Every structure is written in C-alpha cells, then in structure tokens.
Image 1 (cartoon, rainbow, N blue to C red):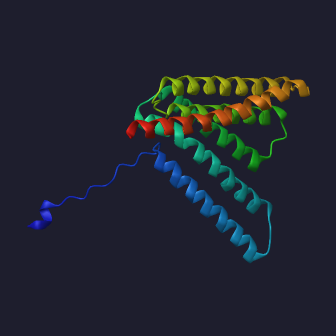
Image 2 (spheres, rainbow, N blue to C red):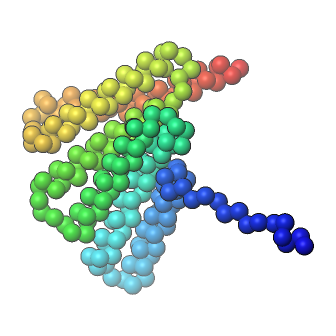
Image 3 (cartoon, one colour):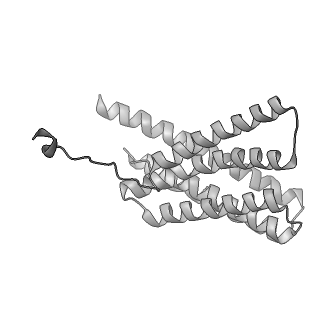
Amino acid sequence: MLAGKFTLVLPKLDPLAPGTFLAGMSAAVVAAFLVIVAMALLGEYTKARGQLLLTFLVLVPFCLSAIPPSTLLRRGRFQPVGWAGLLTIGVGFMLVATGIWATPGSDAFWKTAAIVSIVAAALLMSSWLLLITPAKALVFRLVWTVMATTVLAASLLVVGIIGEIKLAAYWWPVALLLFASALGTLVSLAVDRRLQTNTDL
C-alpha cells in the first residue's frame, strides 16, 4: 500500500544550464587526462590520439566560457547577449575542432575561426559584466565603460585580421585596449563586491 504513495521524480535536464557546461568541462579534463595516461602506458604517440587530446583540451575553455552567458539566461537577464554568447561559443568550438581533425589549409577558414572566437570572447566578457547587479552608480558607469572598451578591442581585432594589418602602430593600441578590458572587468567585480559588502554591514 505504501508503494503506491511514492512516485519517482526525475530531475529536469537543462542542456543550457551552467551546471551542464561545468560538468562538460570536468568531463573534458578527465578525458584529456585518460588520453595522456593511455599514451604513456602504450608508449606510443599517434596523430589521432594527439588530435583527441587537443580536442578535449580545447573543449575545456569553451565550456568554461559558456557558463556566464548560460547564467544570464537562467536569471532571465539580457537574454539576447546570453543566446548570442552560447551560439558563438558553440560555433567557435565546432570550427576549432574541425580545424584540429580536418586540418584545412585555407586562410579563410582560420580567419573565420579566429573571428568567431574573438566575438565569443567579447560576449563572454560582456556576459560576465552583465551578471553584476551594481550597488552604486559608479559601478554601473564602470561596467558599461568596460563593456564599450571590450567591444572596441574586439572590433579592432576583427578588422586587423580581415585586413591582415601588420603595422605595430595599429596593434599596440589594440593590446592596450585588451589589457584595459581585462583589468576593468576585475576592477568592476572587486569594486561592486566591496560596495555590496559595505551595504550589507
């Protein structure tokens, strides 16, 4: 009689949840380790095993990059940015994986892979910043300034790749913008955290 009162409730599987990408990253790390162990035990390196190892190693940062945009989707905030981030990250991984296994010699292919990866990285940074709930107007202004810097740096990178620009005078400002974007993101997170802590006291 008691058996009829209990029902088996299975957890819903959300393939776009942050936990899914975290699990994928963990699985890729374990798989890469197993490939290394297998090559060490067999005492033989083959092209296929090297490609398999490289694929797993590349999958790790792509899965990690998908966590901020997927978190945006989970929270229902800035969903176009979240969807765009997941889409470009997925396409970027497919292009890089294709390059690993098919080894295309086309410059256009690798330029496309690089451009998609740059856009994915910019959307990752933007998603990370948009997860901040500013405690003060200062943080709000800082977040959007850093986002504008990130978009500008990514745009200049794309232009440089498409135009095959080799001038050092062009790439130095791009490098400075990239540094400012990375530093600004860390500063935004730290300042917001500090202000949130002071508000809670």
